[in-house]
Image 1 (tube, rainbow, N blue to C red):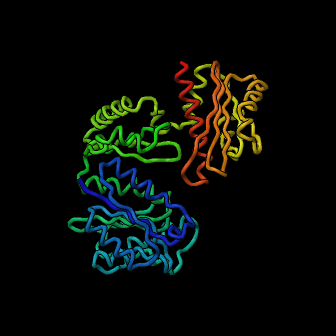
Image 2 (cartoon, one colour):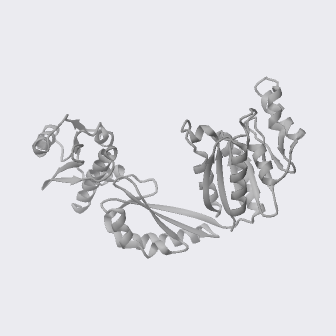
Image 3 (cartoon, rainbow, N blue to C red):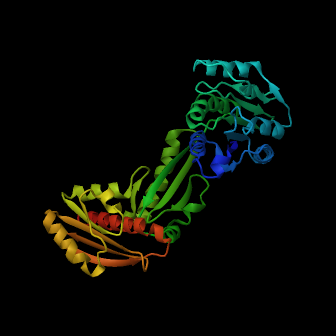
Length: 375
């Protein structure tokens, strides 16, 4: 199977002025086609540096996709960079100019002289129509490579990629495999502990298994490559069953599931009404549990007493309380449920700004686990 690399072009991305969403879109599309993506890179608006990046990508991968730098201004260098990388000259194309004129006429305007830059492409390139913008696209072919250059505007890029680039790649590289992904979400176990339990699965070739740690949550990615979707589904299901058996109720959901949604769903399934109490969380708990009371600078010694009062005044069945203590990077958690009442302190070794989210996720997982065990 061919491999691919993605090059996003634009100084504004490097400076953090805009967020690159194109890479994620293309990566997911390539994955669905069975193409291995090995590297992505962002380059500023410099023709020679872009050309170097394209040359390196062409050496490593069969498919190279660039986004951005196809506008009409002097700081849109992608056309020149691709021509340099391919070792050819730029040439003026009447067919591309016709596209520019047609696109601009839709706005009731005539093209300006500088927009003729968009009618140039590396010599011999395949012209690709842009049905929703003014920048024509192109594909440069070599015996081994296909370098596809697309606009940086996301809605333009996505439509062109779907309508033109996908069919081209399928035909050119005889793509007859798919890659499917399943993400399992875990809480209550650290990344290192999970790694110890599933290390042998992380060495598999197909499906592959990998870990990604977040704040209080660890994701396990299962990726299967197969010629048929049903075959990929079966491969993923076998690994998922093994993971769930090893990790038990540390696995709280998959794919689009969130910890708060699962915790609230399990709590509701017990017929319990829920209220929250938070201090120093800046409303994080209130965003997850609508019936939440905020108490400024609540001291840990008073947490359980205040939580009882909050529970009784709200006539709720369950109360969850969280206090964040920035001074010593700790959090105090309390849970009152039918026939259950407990408080405990946890300490955090990560960055202070992540402490509230970490404490919140620990509290929600505690609520989830208690609701499960009470069923």
